[in-house]
Length: 193
Figure 1: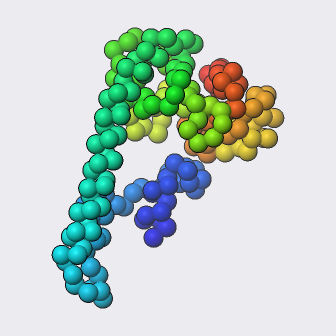
Figure 2: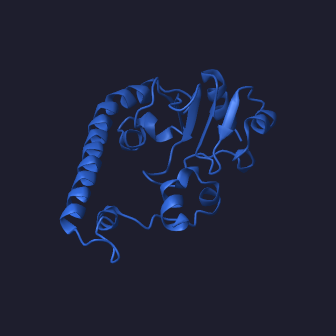
Figure 3: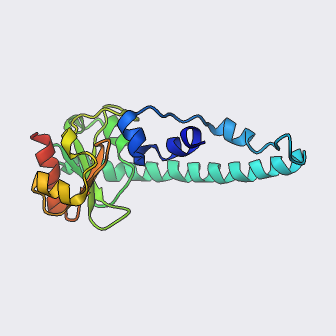
């Protein structure tokens, strides 16, 4: 169950998965819906199972639709940030979905942007994120040095000299610092390495 369900769901936060890239999701929406069918050793109440699956699917559909509308609304914010970008860094004043808009943008500046910075949605400070080569890619226009990846905040601060650096993900696609200035300096250091 760990390899087939848990690790694929938590793939980007799993050190083992990030380091080996050997796990892929073994579930899709069809398999999830089929999992609502009763097992052989349970009461064979298919009507009840159908209603449970339908309620689940309605919840998934509503969240999926809300995400699409939110992404459409974010496009204007991202395009303005692309226009205002400097030094191949996209800086957002709030987190919004940005990858697809950046990759599809007709603004010539978009093709050169290597990193995106935005306020962290989980903790105090700012995150930086590498721009992927294409949507869903595990390769980036510019990555961070291998020896930064997975370090705790103390080690990362010692290695980079960034005073408020607080993390760099094991896969190297995401990191952060407590201040905007340090996050920008973090990214500039990565781009020059």
